[in-house]
Image (cartoon, rainbow, N blue to C red; front, top):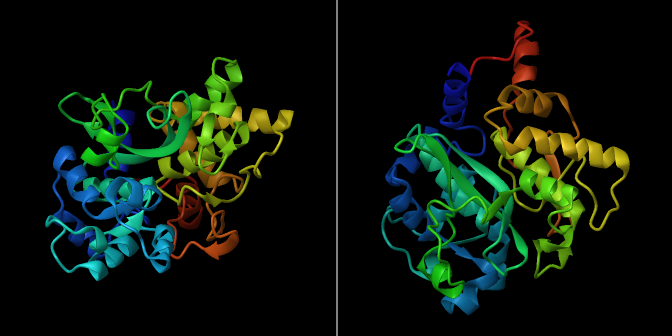
Length: 319
């Protein structure tokens, strides 16, 4: 019970990417309930890839750079720059910030944490975009107090997405066989029960075990409350179409063990992130879409091991 309480406490506290500025004051304009919250967040963003086909909106090219915004605070700056209206008021398509799945999730996670509701971003693959393929995707994993368990909410899926993709499941409680976290995808492919060629990004033609490996590292970072862009690359993330060595496979096997059931491996996954430069997010990363190295743009929190070392206690700092 003590570990369970520590886990929930940890994921109910904001960190560098989810503070929202003025410590979260702007976020409390959003609802605390998951359903209304998702509806409000959906009203703040427009997914660039389907904007024209799904919504009939042709995005000006200069605005496409908005998808590279990191941190909830910077997203909120962009949101209020487009419209000074309260976050709960409807926004026309031209007043929404251009984003992708990670942005929807990041703002929802930030809002839930502002209300001290445990939430975390999960990196993985959705089975409901173009079956039988599994598409690179993020969801919000939130603590459902009534059920006493974690649930997946697909924050991106408004009524338009649901209609276009003929979604039959509850997008506020996505079934576990419809969204696989990166660890589940990795382990299924390593066991031979699923084909790695089914996992990745269809429109970019990026698929394979190397892609899942990169998602494992992003998921580990998100579980340590450093939610990066889905196309940020650093450390041990493989190059596109890389062949993984036996040592690589062993390394990523271990990451899958750590991230598949993060409540059970909570202390170990935090220690691994703090101590291993191959997985820890540096202040400079490679933006794969821009094809360039760039600063994260926000000062990242120091991992627990670093804080403990600085304090001289030799133990992780309390959280």
